[in-house]
Picture (tube, rainbow over the protein chains, first blue to last red):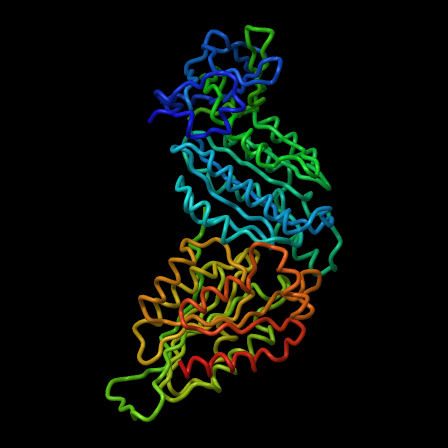
Length: 313
Length: 234
Protein backbone atom coordinates (compact mmCIF):
# COMPACT_ATOMS: atom_id res chain seq x y z
CA UNK A 1 0.00 0.00 0.00
CA UNK A 2 1.58 3.22 -1.13
CA UNK A 3 0.44 6.61 -0.12
CA UNK A 4 -0.58 8.87 -2.92
CA UNK A 5 -0.88 12.60 -2.47
CA UNK A 6 -4.07 12.66 -4.48
CA UNK A 7 -5.76 10.60 -1.82
CA UNK A 8 -5.89 13.52 0.55
CA UNK A 9 -5.46 16.74 -1.43
CA UNK A 10 -6.43 18.85 1.56
CA UNK A 11 -3.46 17.49 3.44
CA UNK A 12 -1.12 18.28 0.61
CA UNK A 13 -2.09 21.93 0.85
CA UNK A 14 -1.14 22.09 4.49
CA UNK A 15 2.06 20.10 4.43
CA UNK A 16 5.06 21.86 3.08
CA UNK A 17 7.31 18.85 2.72
CA UNK A 18 6.97 15.62 0.84
CA UNK A 19 5.28 12.86 2.67
CA UNK A 20 7.01 9.58 3.37
CA UNK A 21 5.23 6.61 1.82
CA UNK A 22 3.95 3.82 3.98
CA UNK A 23 6.67 1.22 4.16
CA UNK A 24 6.89 -1.28 6.94
CA UNK A 25 4.58 -0.12 9.70
CA UNK A 26 6.27 -0.24 13.09
CA UNK A 27 5.35 -3.05 15.41
CA UNK A 28 5.20 -2.47 19.14
CA UNK A 29 4.44 -6.09 19.89
CA UNK A 30 7.25 -8.08 21.46
CA UNK A 31 7.96 -10.25 24.44
CA UNK A 32 8.96 -7.11 26.26
CA UNK A 33 6.49 -4.27 26.55
CA UNK A 34 7.36 -1.54 24.12
CA UNK A 35 6.07 1.92 24.86
CA UNK A 36 4.70 3.67 21.79
CA UNK A 37 5.33 7.37 21.41
CA UNK A 38 3.74 9.14 18.44
CA UNK A 39 5.47 12.46 17.90
CA UNK A 40 4.39 15.43 15.83
CA UNK A 41 7.23 17.71 14.77
CA UNK A 42 6.75 21.25 13.52
CA UNK A 43 9.12 23.97 12.40
CA UNK A 44 9.04 27.53 13.67
CA UNK A 45 6.30 28.39 11.18
CA UNK A 46 4.13 25.54 12.35
CA UNK A 47 4.66 23.33 9.33
CA UNK A 48 4.87 19.61 9.87
CA UNK A 49 8.35 18.13 9.48
CA UNK A 50 8.11 14.48 8.46
CA UNK A 51 11.64 13.64 7.28
CA UNK A 52 13.70 13.31 10.46
CA UNK A 53 15.65 10.22 11.46
CA UNK A 54 15.92 8.25 14.67
CA UNK A 55 19.08 10.11 15.61
CA UNK A 56 17.21 13.40 15.64
CA UNK A 57 15.16 12.27 18.64
CA UNK A 58 15.81 11.71 22.30
CA UNK A 59 13.25 10.22 24.69
CA UNK A 60 13.51 10.85 28.43
CA UNK A 61 11.79 8.48 30.86
CA UNK A 62 11.43 10.24 34.21
CA UNK A 63 14.33 12.40 33.12
CA UNK A 64 16.59 9.56 32.02
CA UNK A 65 17.39 8.97 28.33
CA UNK A 66 16.19 5.65 26.96
CA UNK A 67 17.26 3.66 23.94
CA UNK A 68 14.89 3.99 21.02
CA UNK A 69 14.19 0.46 19.84
CA UNK A 70 11.57 1.20 17.20
CA UNK A 71 11.41 4.11 14.82
CA UNK A 72 9.41 4.90 11.72
CA UNK A 73 8.39 7.98 9.82
CA UNK A 74 6.06 6.00 7.58
CA UNK A 75 2.32 6.47 7.69
CA UNK A 76 0.81 4.68 10.65
CA UNK A 77 -2.83 3.77 10.35
CA UNK A 78 -5.18 4.59 13.20
CA UNK A 79 -8.25 3.20 14.84
CA UNK A 80 -10.37 6.23 15.64
CA UNK A 81 -13.48 6.82 17.72
CA UNK A 82 -15.10 10.03 16.49
CA UNK A 83 -17.35 11.51 19.18
CA UNK A 84 -19.85 14.05 17.90
CA UNK A 85 -21.55 16.07 20.62
CA UNK A 86 -24.83 17.31 19.15
CA UNK A 87 -26.04 19.01 22.31
CA UNK A 88 -26.31 22.73 21.82
CA UNK A 89 -28.94 23.15 24.49
CA UNK A 90 -26.54 24.99 26.78
CA UNK A 91 -26.77 28.05 24.57
CA UNK A 92 -28.76 29.04 21.54
CA UNK A 93 -26.53 29.09 18.52
CA UNK A 94 -25.84 32.50 17.12
CA UNK A 95 -26.17 31.13 13.66
CA UNK A 96 -28.99 29.28 12.03
CA UNK A 97 -29.45 25.91 13.66
CA UNK A 98 -29.75 24.17 10.34
CA UNK A 99 -26.50 25.71 9.14
CA UNK A 100 -24.81 24.67 12.36
CA UNK A 101 -26.01 21.11 12.00
CA UNK A 102 -24.90 20.96 8.37
CA UNK A 103 -21.54 22.43 9.27
CA UNK A 104 -20.87 19.67 11.76
CA UNK A 105 -22.16 16.87 9.58
CA UNK A 106 -20.36 18.09 6.48
CA UNK A 107 -17.09 18.58 8.35
CA UNK A 108 -17.26 15.10 9.83
CA UNK A 109 -18.01 13.74 6.38
CA UNK A 110 -14.98 15.56 5.03
CA UNK A 111 -12.89 14.05 7.81
CA UNK A 112 -14.03 10.63 6.65
CA UNK A 113 -12.74 11.52 3.21
CA UNK A 114 -9.27 12.16 4.61
CA UNK A 115 -8.94 8.68 6.08
CA UNK A 116 -6.32 6.45 4.54
CA UNK A 117 -7.12 2.87 3.58
CA UNK A 118 -5.64 1.46 6.78
CA UNK A 119 -7.54 3.80 9.07
CA UNK A 120 -10.71 2.60 10.74
CA UNK A 121 -13.38 4.74 12.32
CA UNK A 122 -16.25 4.29 14.72
CA UNK A 123 -18.78 7.11 15.01
CA UNK A 124 -20.20 7.78 18.47
CA UNK A 125 -23.07 10.25 18.63
CA UNK A 126 -23.66 12.13 21.86
CA UNK A 127 -27.07 13.69 22.32
CA UNK A 128 -30.02 11.89 23.86
CA UNK A 129 -27.48 9.69 25.57
CA UNK A 130 -24.48 8.00 24.01
CA UNK A 131 -24.88 5.92 20.88
CA UNK A 132 -21.82 4.18 19.49
CA UNK A 133 -22.14 2.75 16.03
CA UNK A 134 -21.67 -1.02 16.05
CA UNK A 135 -19.57 -0.60 12.94
CA UNK A 136 -15.83 0.01 13.12
CA UNK A 137 -14.88 0.34 9.50
CA UNK A 138 -12.66 1.89 6.86
CA UNK A 139 -15.53 1.81 4.36
CA UNK A 140 -16.17 5.45 3.60
CA UNK A 141 -19.56 4.77 2.06
CA UNK A 142 -20.72 3.17 5.28
CA UNK A 143 -19.33 6.00 7.37
CA UNK A 144 -21.00 8.61 5.18
CA UNK A 145 -24.24 6.70 5.46
CA UNK A 146 -24.02 6.70 9.24
CA UNK A 147 -23.40 10.43 9.33
CA UNK A 148 -26.32 10.95 6.97
CA UNK A 149 -28.82 8.76 8.81
CA UNK A 150 -27.82 8.73 12.47
CA UNK A 151 -26.82 12.26 13.30
CA UNK A 152 -29.63 14.29 14.86
CA UNK A 153 -29.64 17.88 16.02
CA UNK A 154 -30.02 18.80 19.64
CA UNK A 155 -29.69 16.98 22.90
CA UNK A 156 -30.43 17.36 26.55
CA UNK A 157 -27.27 17.20 28.60
CA UNK A 158 -23.84 16.15 27.42
CA UNK A 159 -22.32 13.22 29.28
CA UNK A 160 -18.86 14.28 28.14
CA UNK A 161 -16.63 12.08 30.27
CA UNK A 162 -18.92 9.09 30.03
CA UNK A 163 -18.96 9.47 26.25
CA UNK A 164 -15.17 9.58 26.02
CA UNK A 165 -15.05 6.56 28.30
CA UNK A 166 -17.48 4.71 26.02
CA UNK A 167 -15.47 5.79 22.97
CA UNK A 168 -12.24 4.45 24.45
CA UNK A 169 -13.91 1.21 25.48
CA UNK A 170 -15.25 0.79 21.97
CA UNK A 171 -11.77 0.57 20.45
CA UNK A 172 -9.75 -0.57 23.47
CA UNK A 173 -9.21 -4.08 22.17
CA UNK A 174 -7.83 -2.90 18.86
CA UNK A 175 -4.12 -3.11 18.18
CA UNK A 176 -2.01 -0.26 16.90
CA UNK A 177 -2.59 3.41 17.40
CA UNK A 178 -5.89 4.32 19.03
CA UNK A 179 -7.28 7.81 18.70
CA UNK A 180 -10.22 9.59 20.31
CA UNK A 181 -11.42 12.63 18.39
CA UNK A 182 -14.02 14.64 20.30
CA UNK A 183 -16.15 17.38 18.83
CA UNK A 184 -17.40 19.12 21.98
CA UNK A 185 -20.10 21.76 22.16
CA UNK A 186 -20.97 21.66 25.82
CA UNK A 187 -19.30 21.03 29.13
CA UNK A 188 -19.98 17.82 30.94
CA UNK A 189 -23.58 17.89 32.15
CA UNK A 190 -22.96 16.23 35.50
CA UNK A 191 -22.84 19.52 37.35
CA UNK A 192 -25.85 20.96 35.56
CA UNK A 193 -29.07 21.52 37.40
CA UNK A 194 -31.06 23.08 34.61
CA UNK A 195 -33.59 20.26 34.60
CA UNK A 196 -35.74 19.07 37.45
CA UNK A 197 -34.46 17.07 40.36
CA UNK A 198 -35.75 13.77 39.01
CA UNK A 199 -34.09 14.18 35.61
CA UNK A 200 -30.91 15.48 37.15
CA UNK A 201 -30.69 12.58 39.57
CA UNK A 202 -31.33 10.10 36.79
CA UNK A 203 -28.71 11.67 34.54
CA UNK A 204 -26.13 11.60 37.29
CA UNK A 205 -26.89 8.01 38.20
CA UNK A 206 -26.36 6.89 34.62
CA UNK A 207 -23.62 9.12 33.27
CA UNK A 208 -21.64 10.55 36.14
CA UNK A 209 -19.84 7.51 37.45
CA UNK A 210 -16.86 8.52 35.31
CA UNK A 211 -15.06 11.83 35.69
CA UNK A 212 -12.12 13.56 34.09
CA UNK A 213 -9.66 11.77 36.36
CA UNK A 214 -10.96 8.38 35.29
CA UNK A 215 -10.79 9.36 31.62
CA UNK A 216 -7.24 10.66 32.01
CA UNK A 217 -6.18 7.43 33.68
CA UNK A 218 -7.90 5.29 31.04
CA UNK A 219 -6.27 7.27 28.23
CA UNK A 220 -2.83 6.86 29.77
CA UNK A 221 -3.06 3.17 30.57
CA UNK A 222 -4.80 2.33 27.31
CA UNK A 223 -2.33 4.26 25.14
CA UNK A 224 -4.98 6.49 23.60
CA UNK A 225 -4.26 9.73 21.82
CA UNK A 226 -7.00 12.28 22.40
CA UNK A 227 -7.86 15.23 20.15
CA UNK A 228 -10.54 17.71 21.18
CA UNK A 229 -12.30 20.30 19.06
CA UNK A 230 -14.47 22.81 20.89
CA UNK A 231 -16.85 24.97 18.93
CA UNK A 232 -18.20 28.30 20.15
CA UNK A 233 -20.19 29.11 23.25
CA UNK A 234 -18.92 27.32 26.30
CA UNK A 235 -15.64 26.16 24.84
CA UNK A 236 -13.53 23.25 25.89
CA UNK A 237 -13.30 22.20 29.48
CA UNK A 238 -9.81 22.74 30.79
CA UNK A 239 -9.65 19.14 31.98
CA UNK A 240 -10.28 17.95 28.43
CA UNK A 241 -7.51 20.19 27.18
CA UNK A 242 -5.20 18.62 29.76
CA UNK A 243 -6.15 15.10 28.70
CA UNK A 244 -5.59 15.92 25.02
CA UNK A 245 -2.22 17.49 25.61
CA UNK A 246 -1.04 14.81 28.02
CA UNK A 247 -1.81 12.04 25.54
CA UNK A 248 0.12 13.72 22.73
CA UNK A 249 -3.01 14.72 20.87
CA UNK A 250 -4.16 18.30 20.66
CA UNK A 251 -7.01 20.70 21.16
CA UNK A 252 -8.66 23.34 19.05
CA UNK A 253 -10.97 26.00 20.38
CA UNK A 254 -12.88 27.45 17.48
CA UNK A 255 -14.70 30.72 17.24
CA UNK A 256 -18.21 30.94 15.83
CA UNK A 257 -17.30 31.14 12.18
CA UNK A 258 -14.06 29.22 12.27
CA UNK A 259 -13.53 26.65 9.59
CA UNK A 260 -14.42 23.36 11.19
CA UNK A 261 -13.59 21.40 8.08
CA UNK A 262 -10.01 22.62 8.01
CA UNK A 263 -9.64 21.79 11.71
CA UNK A 264 -10.67 18.21 11.05
CA UNK A 265 -8.21 18.18 8.13
CA UNK A 266 -5.50 19.42 10.45
CA UNK A 267 -6.11 16.52 12.82
CA UNK A 268 -5.97 14.07 9.93
CA UNK A 269 -2.81 15.74 8.71
CA UNK A 270 -1.15 15.29 12.09
CA UNK A 271 -2.19 11.68 12.38
CA UNK A 272 -0.71 10.91 8.98
CA UNK A 273 2.58 12.70 9.61
CA UNK A 274 3.68 11.50 13.01
CA UNK A 275 6.79 9.61 13.94
CA UNK A 276 6.25 6.24 15.59
CA UNK A 277 8.90 5.79 18.23
CA UNK A 278 9.22 2.90 20.63
CA UNK A 279 11.31 2.08 23.66
CA UNK A 280 11.38 -0.58 26.34
CA UNK A 281 10.95 0.69 29.87
CA UNK A 282 13.90 -0.08 32.08
CA UNK A 283 11.83 0.03 35.24
CA UNK A 284 8.48 -1.70 34.76
CA UNK A 285 7.23 -0.70 38.18
CA UNK A 286 3.59 -0.21 37.26
CA UNK A 287 3.82 3.48 38.05
CA UNK A 288 3.14 6.57 35.99
CA UNK A 289 6.34 7.82 34.37
CA UNK A 290 6.90 11.22 32.85
CA UNK A 291 7.96 11.30 29.23
CA UNK A 292 9.77 13.98 27.33
CA UNK A 293 10.48 13.97 23.62
CA UNK A 294 13.43 16.11 22.61
CA UNK A 295 14.90 17.03 19.25
CA UNK A 296 18.46 17.80 18.28
CA UNK A 297 17.42 20.78 16.28
CA UNK A 298 16.45 23.81 18.32
CA UNK A 299 14.48 25.09 15.33
CA UNK A 300 11.94 22.33 15.66
CA UNK A 301 9.43 21.38 18.33
CA UNK A 302 8.07 17.94 19.12
CA UNK A 303 4.68 17.17 20.60
CA UNK A 304 4.02 13.71 22.04
CA UNK A 305 2.53 11.96 25.04
CA UNK A 306 3.79 13.22 28.36
CA UNK A 307 3.36 10.11 30.45
CA UNK A 308 2.87 6.36 30.39
CA UNK A 309 2.33 3.53 32.82
CA UNK A 310 5.44 1.35 33.09
CA UNK A 311 3.99 -2.13 33.05
CA UNK A 312 5.60 -5.37 31.94
CA UNK A 313 3.54 -7.43 29.50
CA UNK B 1 -17.65 -3.42 23.93
CA UNK B 2 -20.39 -2.55 21.51
CA UNK B 3 -23.57 -4.43 22.02
CA UNK B 4 -25.66 -5.98 19.35
CA UNK B 5 -27.73 -3.15 18.05
CA UNK B 6 -30.96 -4.51 16.79
CA UNK B 7 -33.72 -4.28 19.22
CA UNK B 8 -36.77 -6.33 18.97
CA UNK B 9 -38.64 -8.81 21.04
CA UNK B 10 -40.79 -11.00 18.91
CA UNK B 11 -43.52 -13.43 19.70
CA UNK B 12 -44.80 -15.69 16.95
CA UNK B 13 -48.27 -14.31 17.19
CA UNK B 14 -51.69 -15.85 17.04
CA UNK B 15 -51.69 -19.27 15.57
CA UNK B 16 -53.08 -19.24 12.10
CA UNK B 17 -52.84 -22.98 12.01
CA UNK B 18 -53.25 -25.51 9.29
CA UNK B 19 -56.59 -26.14 7.75
CA UNK B 20 -57.94 -22.63 8.10
CA UNK B 21 -60.47 -22.08 5.35
CA UNK B 22 -60.66 -18.56 4.08
CA UNK B 23 -63.74 -17.08 2.58
CA UNK B 24 -62.67 -15.46 -0.66
CA UNK B 25 -65.08 -12.62 0.02
CA UNK B 26 -63.40 -11.87 3.28
CA UNK B 27 -60.35 -9.64 3.46
CA UNK B 28 -57.05 -11.48 3.69
CA UNK B 29 -55.60 -11.95 7.11
CA UNK B 30 -52.77 -9.80 8.34
CA UNK B 31 -49.48 -10.92 9.79
CA UNK B 32 -48.47 -7.93 11.80
CA UNK B 33 -45.34 -6.98 13.69
CA UNK B 34 -45.88 -4.10 16.07
CA UNK B 35 -42.84 -2.17 17.23
CA UNK B 36 -42.93 0.28 20.10
CA UNK B 37 -40.04 2.68 20.56
CA UNK B 38 -39.37 2.74 24.30
CA UNK B 39 -36.99 5.69 24.02
CA UNK B 40 -40.01 7.95 23.45
CA UNK B 41 -40.70 8.05 27.16
CA UNK B 42 -38.68 10.34 29.43
CA UNK B 43 -35.55 8.67 30.73
CA UNK B 44 -36.65 8.64 34.31
CA UNK B 45 -40.13 7.30 33.57
CA UNK B 46 -41.15 3.70 34.13
CA UNK B 47 -41.89 2.33 30.69
CA UNK B 48 -44.44 -0.06 32.16
CA UNK B 49 -46.55 2.86 33.22
CA UNK B 50 -46.25 4.67 29.91
CA UNK B 51 -49.91 5.42 29.07
CA UNK B 52 -49.15 5.43 25.38
CA UNK B 53 -47.99 1.83 25.52
CA UNK B 54 -51.36 0.85 26.91
CA UNK B 55 -53.14 2.79 24.20
CA UNK B 56 -51.11 1.15 21.50
CA UNK B 57 -51.41 -2.41 22.74
CA UNK B 58 -55.10 -2.17 23.49
CA UNK B 59 -55.64 -0.56 20.10
CA UNK B 60 -53.95 -3.42 18.35
CA UNK B 61 -55.77 -5.98 20.40
CA UNK B 62 -59.12 -4.48 19.50
CA UNK B 63 -58.28 -4.31 15.85
CA UNK B 64 -57.22 -7.85 15.20
CA UNK B 65 -59.47 -10.09 13.19
CA UNK B 66 -59.65 -13.77 14.00
CA UNK B 67 -57.09 -14.92 11.52
CA UNK B 68 -54.67 -12.11 12.06
CA UNK B 69 -51.42 -12.66 13.89
CA UNK B 70 -49.48 -10.14 15.89
CA UNK B 71 -45.94 -10.04 17.13
CA UNK B 72 -44.85 -7.40 19.56
CA UNK B 73 -41.39 -5.92 19.76
CA UNK B 74 -39.61 -3.00 21.34
CA UNK B 75 -37.12 -0.72 19.70
CA UNK B 76 -34.14 -0.45 22.01
CA UNK B 77 -30.64 -1.82 21.88
CA UNK B 78 -31.09 -5.52 22.58
CA UNK B 79 -33.76 -8.17 22.75
CA UNK B 80 -35.70 -7.54 25.90
CA UNK B 81 -38.64 -9.86 25.82
CA UNK B 82 -40.23 -12.49 23.65
CA UNK B 83 -43.74 -13.85 23.93
CA UNK B 84 -46.02 -15.88 21.75
CA UNK B 85 -49.66 -14.88 21.86
CA UNK B 86 -52.26 -17.55 21.17
CA UNK B 87 -55.79 -17.18 19.92
CA UNK B 88 -57.20 -17.10 23.40
CA UNK B 89 -54.88 -14.67 25.02
CA UNK B 90 -55.15 -11.77 22.65
CA UNK B 91 -56.91 -9.83 25.34
CA UNK B 92 -53.83 -10.28 27.47
CA UNK B 93 -51.65 -8.46 24.96
CA UNK B 94 -51.29 -5.46 27.20
CA UNK B 95 -51.21 -7.07 30.63
CA UNK B 96 -48.79 -9.80 29.62
CA UNK B 97 -46.50 -7.35 27.93
CA UNK B 98 -46.43 -4.95 30.82
CA UNK B 99 -45.90 -7.75 33.31
CA UNK B 100 -43.02 -9.28 31.43
CA UNK B 101 -41.33 -6.29 29.87
CA UNK B 102 -38.11 -5.22 31.53
CA UNK B 103 -36.18 -2.61 29.63
CA UNK B 104 -32.67 -2.17 30.98
CA UNK B 105 -31.95 1.47 31.57
CA UNK B 106 -28.85 1.35 29.40
CA UNK B 107 -31.04 0.41 26.46
CA UNK B 108 -33.01 3.62 26.81
CA UNK B 109 -30.25 6.15 27.28
CA UNK B 110 -29.20 6.02 23.69
CA UNK B 111 -30.78 6.52 20.30
CA UNK B 112 -33.01 3.64 19.29
CA UNK B 113 -31.68 1.31 16.59
CA UNK B 114 -34.86 1.86 14.62
CA UNK B 115 -33.57 0.68 11.26
CA UNK B 116 -32.24 -2.62 12.59
CA UNK B 117 -35.40 -3.20 14.60
CA UNK B 118 -37.52 -2.69 11.49
CA UNK B 119 -35.22 -4.94 9.50
CA UNK B 120 -35.60 -7.74 12.03
CA UNK B 121 -39.34 -7.17 12.21
CA UNK B 122 -39.59 -7.59 8.45
CA UNK B 123 -37.72 -10.88 8.68
CA UNK B 124 -39.94 -12.03 11.52
CA UNK B 125 -43.22 -11.29 9.79
CA UNK B 126 -42.17 -12.35 6.29
CA UNK B 127 -43.15 -16.05 6.64
CA UNK B 128 -46.62 -15.09 7.80
CA UNK B 129 -49.86 -15.57 5.95
CA UNK B 130 -51.90 -12.95 4.15
CA UNK B 131 -50.83 -9.36 4.17
CA UNK B 132 -47.61 -8.81 5.98
CA UNK B 133 -46.96 -5.54 7.66
CA UNK B 134 -44.81 -3.86 10.25
CA UNK B 135 -46.27 -0.95 12.19
CA UNK B 136 -43.95 1.09 14.34
CA UNK B 137 -44.85 3.73 16.90
CA UNK B 138 -41.76 5.89 17.04
CA UNK B 139 -40.17 9.27 17.44
CA UNK B 140 -38.39 8.64 14.15
CA UNK B 141 -34.90 9.08 15.58
CA UNK B 142 -32.47 6.30 14.88
CA UNK B 143 -28.86 5.48 15.69
CA UNK B 144 -26.42 2.65 16.21
CA UNK B 145 -27.64 0.54 13.30
CA UNK B 146 -25.87 -2.12 11.30
CA UNK B 147 -28.29 -1.80 8.40
CA UNK B 148 -28.97 1.27 6.32
CA UNK B 149 -32.46 2.48 5.53
CA UNK B 150 -31.78 1.70 1.90
CA UNK B 151 -31.08 -1.91 2.87
CA UNK B 152 -34.22 -1.92 4.99
CA UNK B 153 -36.43 -0.78 2.13
CA UNK B 154 -34.88 -3.31 -0.24
CA UNK B 155 -35.39 -6.07 2.33
CA UNK B 156 -39.02 -5.10 2.93
CA UNK B 157 -39.73 -4.98 -0.79
CA UNK B 158 -38.13 -8.33 -1.38
CA UNK B 159 -40.11 -9.88 1.47
CA UNK B 160 -43.27 -8.05 0.36
CA UNK B 161 -43.77 -6.50 3.76
CA UNK B 162 -45.14 -3.00 4.12
CA UNK B 163 -43.77 -0.58 6.70
CA UNK B 164 -46.13 1.84 8.43
CA UNK B 165 -45.28 4.43 11.05
CA UNK B 166 -47.25 6.29 13.66
CA UNK B 167 -45.01 9.25 14.31
CA UNK B 168 -44.94 10.23 17.98
CA UNK B 169 -42.37 12.91 18.78
CA UNK B 170 -40.53 13.07 22.04
CA UNK B 171 -42.37 15.07 24.67
CA UNK B 172 -41.12 18.43 25.77
CA UNK B 173 -40.76 21.90 24.47
CA UNK B 174 -38.17 23.67 22.43
CA UNK B 175 -38.04 21.22 19.59
CA UNK B 176 -41.33 21.92 17.99
CA UNK B 177 -43.27 19.37 19.94
CA UNK B 178 -46.13 21.60 21.04
CA UNK B 179 -48.08 21.56 17.81
CA UNK B 180 -47.84 20.02 14.36
CA UNK B 181 -47.17 23.44 12.87
CA UNK B 182 -44.37 24.15 15.31
CA UNK B 183 -42.94 20.72 14.69
CA UNK B 184 -42.87 21.17 10.94
CA UNK B 185 -41.40 24.65 11.24
CA UNK B 186 -38.66 23.51 13.60
CA UNK B 187 -37.54 20.62 11.45
CA UNK B 188 -37.78 22.52 8.19
CA UNK B 189 -34.52 24.26 8.99
CA UNK B 190 -32.55 20.99 9.06
CA UNK B 191 -31.46 18.81 6.17
CA UNK B 192 -32.76 15.81 8.13
CA UNK B 193 -36.04 15.19 9.91
CA UNK B 194 -37.77 12.20 11.48
CA UNK B 195 -40.89 12.85 9.42
CA UNK B 196 -38.94 12.89 6.17
CA UNK B 197 -37.24 9.64 7.10
CA UNK B 198 -40.46 7.90 8.06
CA UNK B 199 -42.28 9.21 5.00
CA UNK B 200 -39.52 7.87 2.81
CA UNK B 201 -39.50 4.31 4.12
CA UNK B 202 -43.26 3.98 4.39
CA UNK B 203 -43.99 5.30 0.92
CA UNK B 204 -41.27 3.11 -0.58
CA UNK B 205 -42.85 -0.03 0.86
CA UNK B 206 -46.52 0.70 0.34
CA UNK B 207 -47.17 1.48 3.99
CA UNK B 208 -48.83 4.38 5.75
CA UNK B 209 -47.24 7.32 7.49
CA UNK B 210 -49.29 9.03 10.17
CA UNK B 211 -47.97 12.51 10.77
CA UNK B 212 -47.13 13.78 14.25
CA UNK B 213 -49.75 15.36 16.41
CA UNK B 214 -47.48 16.44 19.25
CA UNK B 215 -50.04 18.57 21.04
CA UNK B 216 -52.72 15.89 21.13
CA UNK B 217 -51.22 12.81 22.76
CA UNK B 218 -54.65 11.40 23.54
CA UNK B 219 -55.37 10.65 19.91
CA UNK B 220 -52.56 8.16 19.59
CA UNK B 221 -55.00 5.25 19.62
CA UNK B 222 -57.07 6.87 16.92
CA UNK B 223 -54.04 7.41 14.74
CA UNK B 224 -52.96 3.84 15.27
CA UNK B 225 -56.42 2.65 14.34
CA UNK B 226 -56.19 4.56 11.07
CA UNK B 227 -52.90 2.86 10.38
CA UNK B 228 -54.23 -0.60 11.13
CA UNK B 229 -57.28 0.02 8.94
CA UNK B 230 -54.97 1.02 6.15
CA UNK B 231 -52.97 -2.15 6.64
CA UNK B 232 -56.12 -4.22 6.30
CA UNK B 233 -57.09 -2.39 3.14
CA UNK B 234 -53.74 -2.72 1.42
